[in-house]
Amino acid sequence: MEILLNGQPCQARDGATLDDLLREQGLAERRVAIEVNGEIVPRGRRAEHVLLPADRVEIVHALGGG
Image (cartoon, rainbow, N blue to C red; front, top):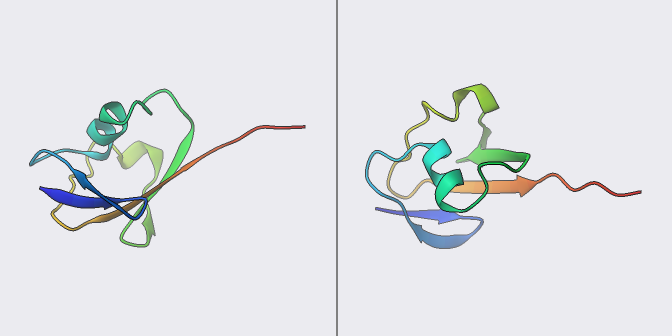
C-alpha cells in the first residue's frame, strides 16, 4: 500500500505498524516524534498503530546541540 512519509510517496506492507515503518526506515533506535494524519502518536502506541492506505505520516528527528 502507499502512504505519504514526510510528504513523499512510500510503500508500506499491508498491516504494517508504526514500529515496522521505523525499522524499515532505519529509525528504530532514534528518538523521533510521529504524527499520523495530523495526530501525534505516543511512543507507547506505535506497536499497535496499524497504517492504512493514504495515511500521511510525519517523522521528526530529535537533534541535540550546544
